[in-house]
Length: 137
Image (cartoon, rainbow, N blue to C red; front, side, top):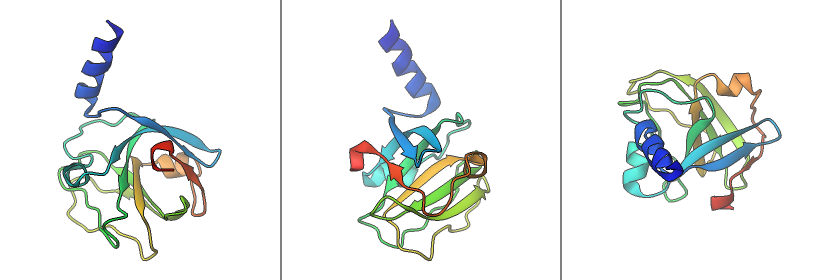
């Protein structure tokens, strides 16, 4: 019965299996990893609600200088740009839902972590914070 609930939750929430991502000693989020082209393209599109402790990490090592956007994304997001040494190099806070504006960083990055808008401020996340995410380390 517990497994049925987990499957239903994942389908309902729009998430498949999530792994913990720790940011410095400030916060832990359960995030889904986007690595395949179709995962990177879809991201959090069509997700109507995002629990406070959930998010997504995009592995963009194969796509240097990639840009993000909020097309078909219904919740405001904070985007943390993370370098290959797993340090936050830039933060874009409160991305506007459904916007087609390109969002990127002037700094080199390998990953983007998307969290519910306001998370960066709430948890005092800042440039220089180290992230820990076992599937990529």
